[in-house]
Image (tube, rainbow, N blue to C red; front, side, top):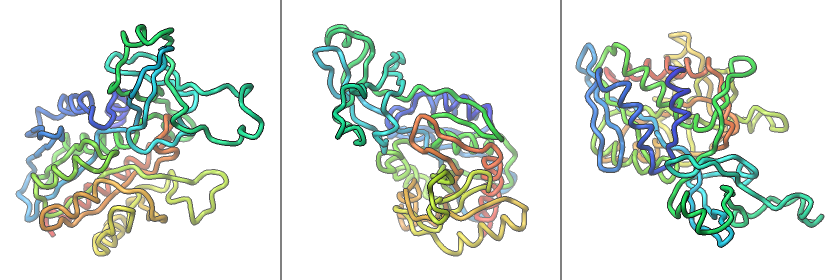
Length: 339
C-alpha cells in the first residue's frame, strides 16, 4: 500500500486531468477485478468476493488534486494562472511547479521583499499579482513550452521523516486511492464496488455520476481531512490529530451523516481494536456530499486520514493512521454488505 502511495503521489492529476493516476490504478487491479471508465473519467471497479452481499456497497476515493491552470502569457514570457480547487495563496509563494504534460519547471514568482513598501510587508499578495516564471524571455519563447489551459502541479518530493511521518503533495486523496487498491487486491468476503472519482476538488462532480450509475445501498468515502494539531491552534479547533487513527465525521459542510452509521463505526473499532477519532470541527466537504443525495438517497459514511497542511505542496500524514483507515473501512464495508 505504501509503495502504491508513493507512486500515486508522484503522478500529476489536477482536477479534470486525472489520466495518469487512473492509468496507474488500472495497471494494478485490472487482472483481479472488472473495470470500466465512465464518460466523466471515473474508474468504476467491481471486485468479486466470497459471497453475494445483501446490500450493494460502494467505496469511493478521488483521484484528483488541487493545482494551478495557465490563463494568459505576458509579453515578457510569464504565465498568469488561477487555482484549480481550494489553494491558499500563501502556499503558492515562491514554490516550484511543473507545467503541462512535459513537466516544464517553473517558480511561482512574487515581488521581492526589498521592493515591497513597509506598510505592505504584512499583507498576503493578491493571487492576481502572482505568475509562473519558466525562464522564458518573451511571449513567443514561453509559447513553445506552455499555453492557456495547461495545468501546473506543485513539484514536491515524497519524503519519510520523523516518527512514522510522510510528506508529499497530493496525499489528498492519493492515500484513499492507495487504501482501496490494497483492498481490491485482497480476498474480500463480499462482492464490492469501488469508485475512483474525478473532479472532487472542483465540486464533487465525478462522485455525482459514479453514485448514479452504481446505485449503491451504502457508500464509504475514503478521504483525507485537515489535522490542525500544530502550534498555536486551540485543542477544540484541531479537528483531529496525527497518530490517533482514522477520522470519522458526524458533519461537514456538504453532509450531515447518519448518526446510526457514525455510532456503528466506533462500535466496530472497539470490537476489532482499531484506532479511530471523531472529526471535531464542522469544516470542509467531500464526495459524500454528492453520493448521499444520489437517486433516492444513499446511506453514506466518510472515513478520513488525518493530514496536516492539506492542499499544500507539503501535506503530512502518519503511516500508522493509514493502516487504521484500511482496517475500519473493511470492517464497515463488511457490516454494510450484510446489514
